[in-house]
Image (cartoon, rainbow, N blue to C red; front, top):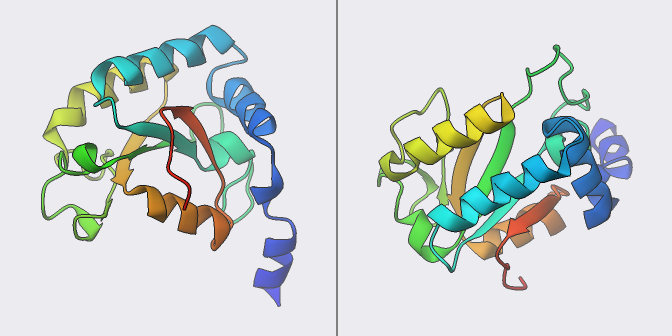
Length: 165
């Protein structure tokens, strides 16, 4: 079955250091200082109990949906999938912006530019910093556990700490 093959090659087995190396190389042009600046900006502007994690092809090197490489359509064409994890930041999203009410939001992105007004400026700053769209979603920590363990979607923690599932 095709999905079994995909699961066999899923990048969920990447170590945190491998995901970080991918992120620095692919999204920050090999510049570790740019990643540190990105993380500093997140930590400065988010509630203390918030973790920030990067998901998607910027950490795995390939799209989860189809296996295409990061920036397959040319330089700067892949976005970054930033997920904010924590109770307070979830409340920064409009009530109509949830896939799971009160738990898991749709992303603040070009297609949904008004779902989290308090995060619009942060998104603009981060997008300018990396020269590509940064999509920002919020969720509870147990959703991250489910995505990684049950769906094979790895993530790299940039700031803060997630509770164990």
